[in-house]
Image 1 (tube, rainbow, N blue to C red):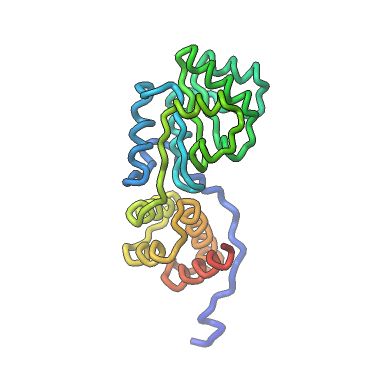
Image 2 (cartoon, rainbow, N blue to C red):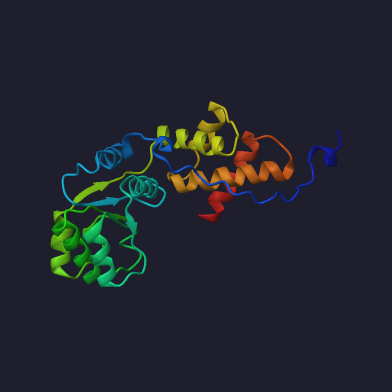
Length: 229
């Protein structure tokens, strides 16, 4: 076999959409996620009307929030006015995502929380960090947030990352063995977002070269991930 034969020319793969399944049965739960998943499963039997779900990017909180939104038929807050947002919180469950990143008006959040509590509705707020780190300057809002139920999601452990890799590859009708999964998990960034990125790049690279998934291919992708960090 010649050197040119050994390396097949790369072909541009078609861009297929690989949407990760977002149902409850698709959620991989291990210790970092167990408390948050249990609380979502308990709805509407929550310890308080307002729940704050905090966790780093790629920790699984978006998946959990989407499960809850569908289960509760909750409205997702977007760019509503204060009056419209309050009206939503008065008539049904509301989801507020990335509260620490989307720069929601503090007065708006205060009134939404009050409306949900006053009308017996549920409010789920997601964020990267706990409310005390949001830079809240409105004392009344901080008081309401301190009264909410806070659930923090820790970084994913090896068991969770391994199961997530299996799931993400399965979503693409691909299979990997335990050795390849362990190799990737032992060298990747500790986040679910990184797992998604690695699976996507491995799939595309294997398709472009017309080869099977392998440790050598994974090493190439992981090296690229480290360079992008």
